[in-house]
Length: 98
Figure 1: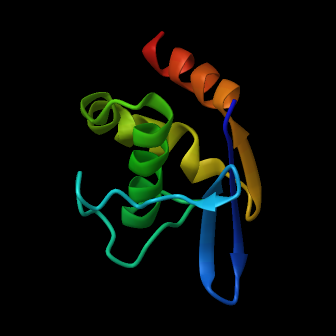
Figure 2: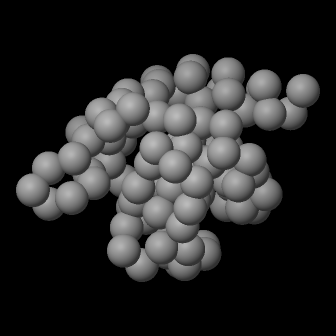
């Protein structure tokens, strides 16, 4: 099970997966050249949603199809510092599809 964590530092918003920096996946879709964000709906949170889903699902097409709804339901309501597991993401996706 993967663990995704986000927090803020002097370097700005930092997101890791199992302790390593999460790739922004600008190759899939360049939503936010400024990087990841969360706690609201917008370009930075959308980029985070896309990167999280691409990493978690291992399927770029599914990630592109689901990132907007995932951003609104999950990323926009995260606290300043947060932690999501693979199980948390699966649960959120199951709720989105219902």
